[in-house]
Length: 227
Image 1 (tube, rainbow, N blue to C red):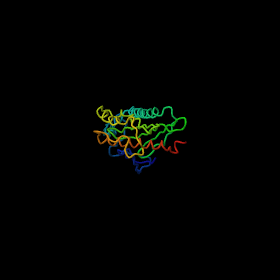
Image 2: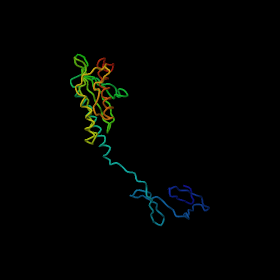
Image 3: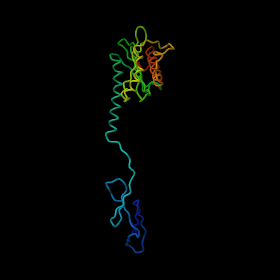
Image 4: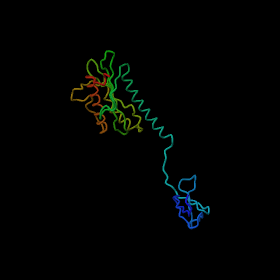
């Protein structure tokens, strides 16, 4: 280290200037401030005479350590509900699954085949914006008489905490049960919703689109079902 005079600034940086006499060190003429540790937030500066001055630091709110784990746990619960819905719909069938995302409008498609290799049930789901972002799932069966929209469900409807809002969203699903439909017809499986809100009409459009698309996929199974 160079011999000379030390100047210690508040930032803790030391500037050494050479002095005439070799080996001599002189104390700075101005008060020397140095950092000192403290259990409190902020910067603490200690003067040579022992007096301490503290400058408050910026406080940053922090989430409890368990908050992140709680969010992941809730997300996992809703994801399990969606998977359970799909599994129950395709129970007993050889299930094939599309990539994720399937398209810009559908997150994933599943098609279940019987032992003879005939497509029997199709499932599709996507996220839908409502009072909260929820997942809409449609289940379509292929019967001897054509296609039937078995049902549409919102497995993670529990994301909507307000009971009134939740009930309003659920009313959309009442007409999406056991509905025969022709995927080639211009008319949707569920054509109109009486008294539906703007969100209800939009949600109905998504559910109808997925039902029609799943039926068409079962009619002519794509390559990914053969892998």
